[in-house]
Image (tube, rainbow, N blue to C red; front, top):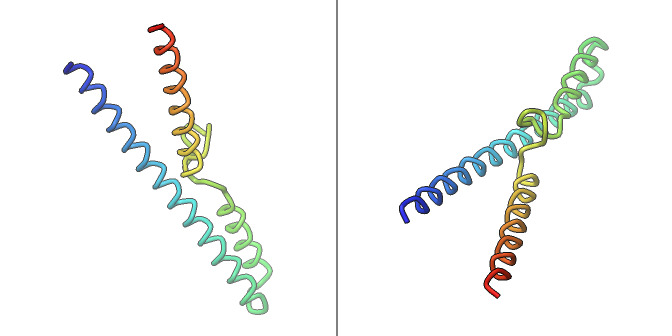
Length: 107
């Protein structure tokens, strides 16, 4: 019985860590969008006072901040709320299938 409780606690801890990482990824992605919008606003509002070199440098920064999500574990996927919802759906589907097999073994 104790072994099962330890597994449940470890799973809960892992879920909280994943949720924290997803929240961080979402916050960083939102921050990137805010910085990108601010930089584009600078280019639009001050286009007559900026030199072409300054405009080009700002546009390079805009391109840098156009990344969809700055948190990419091992460059495999974006870590944000969308990927979290996909992971939760995958785990729930897996659990449901396992339960169906378990109920089939009883009969």
